[in-house]
Image (cartoon, rainbow, N blue to C red; front, side, top):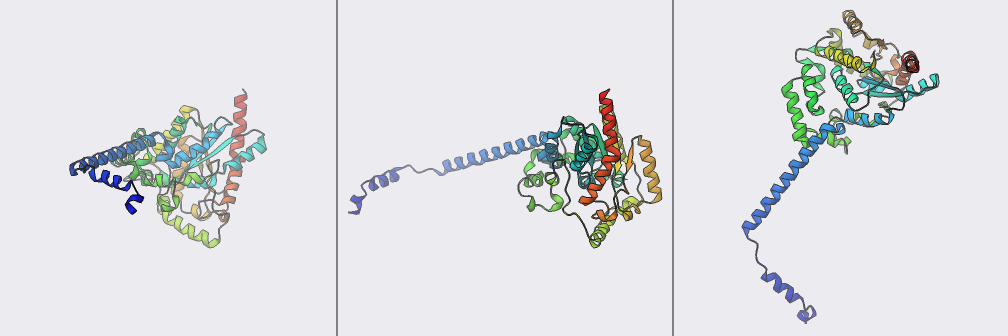
Length: 369
């Protein structure tokens, strides 16, 4: 009865039983084709990602690329003021506050943008300025932070080589960093890794697009993603206790004292700074140099001789130097050189009133002529 209640079961069984068995050799050929096809797809995807990262900076160097996306809507809206610098600039140059101050005082707008990037120096700033020019974001006024420690030159090259690696560079930028003291073999090796094996070489940049919290803080590239529309890296807190500032200052002392106390500002870093100023002159970009605020204790780490050397260099560069070292009181720092929000507002207010408004008024007169 069960057989007749399912009349097609026998037919299906019969068809299955008469199917030709697949040979082992055929299975091997199919598996081989699948492996080859998968490998080819992987190579194509890797090459595609590597080539794309050469022209799309948000993949290879998110520090630069993420801020460029935020800068682009400002282009052409008003005179553009860009501040290039380190994390000090990143936490200190409050573009929105500056724009509001200038508009309120002059009645004419400006576009202010913060291009502060951690662990950067003259060589990185030169690269970024050249990129901005190529990307159609040439500033009318460039405020360039001078971090004195980054002007040091060691027996193995500039200090920036410890933080700027080949995977953040395009192929055209390799000769530039090599000229300024980077090891050509190491830079080229890491660039090749980013271009031909990007899934590994750019793993931190790629993971940072989706799961930043999985990456150790020292390996993260999402600094620029969390900034406001003017590129300002908003401090997490508005205040710090004396105990917290003391701990932060100890860490800063361990990092900076030995370099600053015997600083010789020369070599590749200074050469890169000179080249940057030359590029600005060629492009008609107004430029002002600025040394960011530091606490009273931090400023004692410069020996008198080092202060004389720095003053001589600044005079030799032939460019206006804004010494803002004493603009902010100690309680508005986290560690003696990074500003809290009130410190950033105080610094930005004074910068706007003492430097940017006079420049803006003078620029307006020049344009009117």
